[in-house]
Amino acid sequence: MPMWWGKEIAASRQLIRLAVILLLGALTGACFQPLYGDKTISADESIRDKLGAIEIADVPAPKGSPTARLAVAVRNALIYDLNGNANPISPTHRLQVTLSATTTTVIVDVSSGRPETQVEAVNATFTLTEITTQKVVLNSSTFARASFDIPGTEQRFAQQRAQRNAEDRAVELIAQNIRSRLASFFVAGA
Image (tube, rainbow, N blue to C red; front, side, top):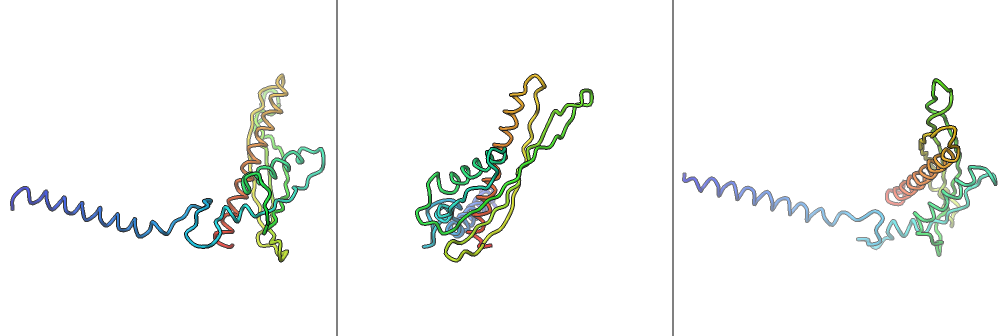
């Protein structure tokens, strides 16, 4: 058997492997669609359209409390994430969210007894209700934790800003978690 014959067999095997991979890619390529995209393969609405048809209710919180700021921030983040900062023209579902927030000291300086690191905890419970039937179709909860360092006793405003930044990070995470859960509900129906 000549030497060039072995190279030709190896090249033909690679060509067959490439053809099989391309064939499998072509067969499965039509099975996927983007989750949040507006182009659909079927005649159904896209997830983006379904999320855009959700009316977001005011998040209840006592006026003037630290939770009130978080409630407004969560609602604003959800409006932006779901509807792109627009009110739905004809809402099909209504989303109601309730919040609770706590701050916990994690690390304490042993020499001074002062806290060095704290964690901002935000818990959210949400309910998705179908507007036409007033039937609750989804009831779930989520949480977010964000830590922040306390720079020292002389920098009390820096501590307040660090806490607010931690709250803002937790709020964004809550909104992302709710959006992901709603998207999976509309895709899977459960």
